[in-house]
Length: 420
Image (cartoon, rainbow, N blue to C red; front, side, top):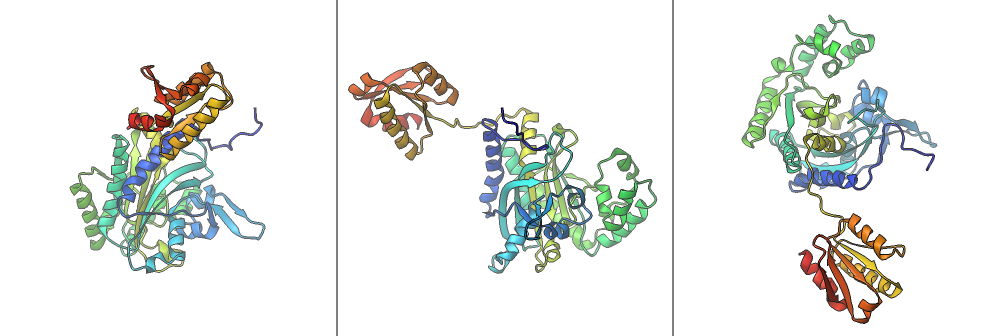
């Protein structure tokens, strides 16, 4: 046994479970690919300052959870804790916003890293699929992304998730709310670290999950009462578009996201079957982020959905995905001549798009047939010296056990026809 283990708070993704994770990524990205979103891939690490400016220097992500390090050349880098800042940085660097076709619609899939206390549904290395629509202020974009996420979850068979929706206002109305919230929070019995947040970003206090803090927030002022007319109208249009699409949601006037860059529309997808880590994804509008990281004004909106959390939600509902077998045909050679002949047939099947595997290692018939059973193949090709002398291969249907002699020169066509 190896003396090495996966780092604390991480896990290895292995077959057959890995097929479920791949299917989840595919299901989440499919509606995006069908809606004009192009794929983007960014480095696994970035300049620390990108996240400090964008995510927020007072957030737990930056102050406590980010894996930051200094390179041999003296650069201050960090493993990416989230995707939006990286995607926007890449879009700005490549001047995608200058191509004249706004919004720039991008989707991504990858690994992210946060130093957190490991628990079910919360890992130090986790996987997300995300989407960003950059460069347009339009409630239809906000609604589109919420609808596409709902479509993705429902295509997987999830039914017991909820969509929470709120508006965080903008630079006009949020300062007024911020002042009222600060005044309220200063009168509460809070620990020193939480009191520091009152001055830096009081909305983050509303996101505190501790019961003793939440109990004191019952009478806190709500942003809804402070929204300017423009933000109210924008939010009502988002709500109307989602409703017209038949997507159910819940207004949550206390919903805030854990990142500083959000403005106006904010939303979260939660699943009550996951316990305390109920969020499976979320996002919102971030109209000022581009300027925060040195770019022009580019109002934008996006979300990220957790692959790990989505798999846990599927398990909580008892949903079994209909995954195709990784192998359709398994070849079992008996003897050296048969090994070469069947290997050639397997190669041709693969070139024709048939999932085929082979009994490697010179296994005997009994062991090779066990391997064929474990592979999940619908058909097994078996050949020995006598079969080759007669110019045939035995084609066995695994479920029924029915076996047919098929001419060597037509076995590929026969297999393809049966699988079709």
